Length: 410
Image 1 (tube, rainbow, N blue to C red):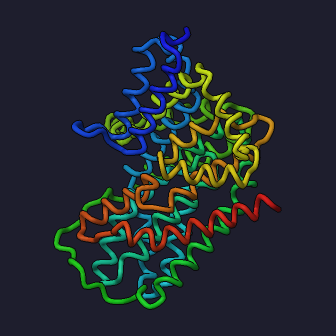
Image 2: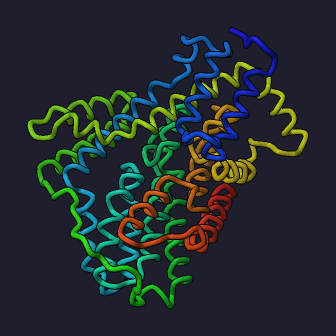
Image 3: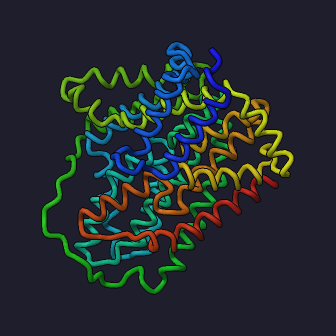
């Protein structure tokens, strides 16, 4: 159904994305998810889309994959796997440089196959507590955790929400994605480790003079059986991803099997599902469908070409993705760029996945993983300022993007 007024879809789209960029609307307590949801509602209320069109705009396979992986991550979290993993590398605290390397490798590996946000949420309190008890400078290690989790998540289709979206909408092969995105992610991780060591070379092992830990911390106790179930589920899922079976069907089947438990309550598992993120995805699908019903996108493509901007150029796509990801956040930026990509050029989809994820390291507000680390650390008296993060995030992002550009050239 066409909109009642010309350019109505474009107007609603622009207002919504400005709100997403600002992160709030003055006078109300809406966050980015609320703003996106209102934008989707407006697309229906003003007649840009019918309710049926709005429902069909939501990519159900992507939502199912995201939902299923959240359930699997919840299983591992309730089983104490994440806290147990973090605790097992604490013996290296007496050798800070080696500990930082182990921390970044572990968090990157887990983030590649599990949600990077969950890895940061579970690792941060364990890591911060150990650093406070050892009276070590917590900043390089906590920043290393955030940076490595973001970079590691870029390597696979299931590492983060925007990659899941790109993989599902683009119909990308799991193995081909890993082969293309894995090497630059590993190189970016190594360069990030070197940058943190360089910038904190005189401060990585200094005695920390900030607030000391005063309360006993409680995190999920390690449950060998529940953790084994979760790890077997992840292994089975990865194997199934290399078969012709649809990824979302494989994932929801494994998630359903995990829900059949005699000890883990369904309510506890579903309580760890990030419903806000799922709502954001659904709302953005509707908003993007609304703008595609308008003539703005074809005109915009012509205008960009006139300015010499070609989204088929992978270096230019990298730059634009980086800017938009820091302006709107990764997922909205990815959804905004997807309509411009060609289905017969998978390398463009890979480039968008890597660049939008690497861009999350630029600023503290660039990714949810960064904010989770900062908020969890603050609860224990450790403050990570915008300046602290930028001092690491800016050179790490520049190095990562340069690695991507070189990889594209090769």
